[in-house]
Length: 236
Image 1 (cartoon, one colour):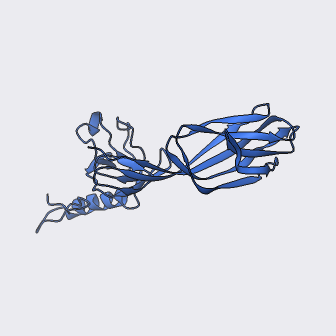
Image 2: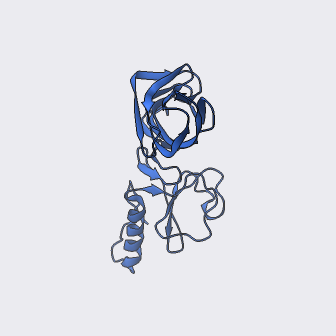
Image 3: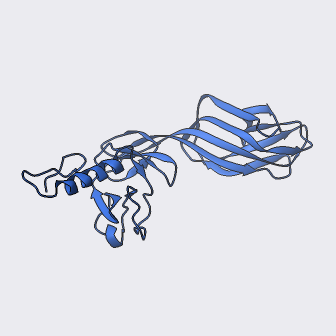
């Protein structure tokens, strides 16, 4: 059956019987590909039941009904799967990670704002995490700013009121404890927007650090987000 070039939509043939079957298949593909949302790009086995309209990016090593369709999109349709080959530059939203993705011809790249033919990527990312504050004068996050990241800002809110003998707190990194804020509030719901005064590149993996001012931490919880730029080199 003839198909359209970009979306692979089936075309009606002259004097074709049961035209509704072809039209319905085309509509099902359009419904899955328009405002593209990918359920997963890592799940290698198809779900037991194909949800109508659900779209999966089929990874390498796929099994079952997805075997042999690596790199394609699997769209749930009529209890089975319709497969479409993505084109370079297609964009979507990956629900399992909450990231925008672009197809670069070999994979779905998260948070890419620019992609070269050799698969060099420019990435803008916002990574959010919760941090429970332990007792003491400082508290270091388990989240690590990755090597070579350029941090544009660190933002956050107090999720659970910060307790202890301190009067305020600072947000920064080891060696620069107030880089992203000082004199910060202890009250639940209070916030911090710590902008980098100039592009701040980290040449080694680096955690964030909270430092108590005027006393010590006893407890509390923060929700933090690190906003950063990263770049990857081209492949050969």
